[in-house]
Image 1 (cartoon, rainbow, N blue to C red):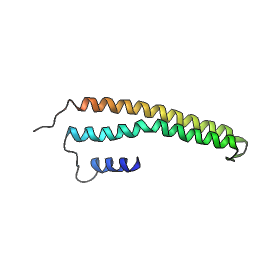
Image 2: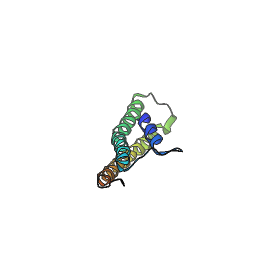
Image 3: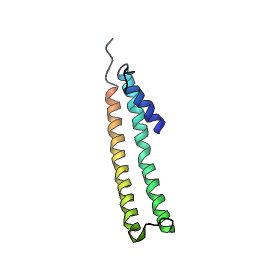
Image 4: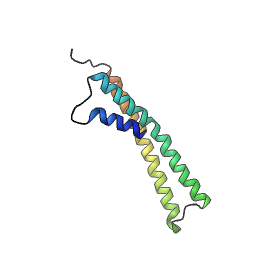
Length: 104
C-alpha cells in the first residue's frame, strides 16, 4: 500500500505535473479509494493483535496496560470508521469525475 501511495504522490507532486486530465485524476482517486477500503480491516487486525497479546500476557506495561490497550483499540476502530467514510467520499468523487472531459 505504501508503494502505491508513493506512486500516486509522484504523479501529483514535483516540478512537472504528470496529470494530463480528468482520466488521470480518476485513476489516482481509484488508487486512493482502493487503499482506503483496505484500512478498516487492517486497523481491526492491529487492534485484535494487541488485544490478544494483552490477554496472553505478552504486553507488559504495568497496571495501566489494560486501559492503554483499550484506548489504542478504540482509536484504531475510530480510524477504521473514518477510513470507511473516506473510501465512500473517494468513490463519489470518482463517479463525478467520469462526467468531466479534458479540453481538446
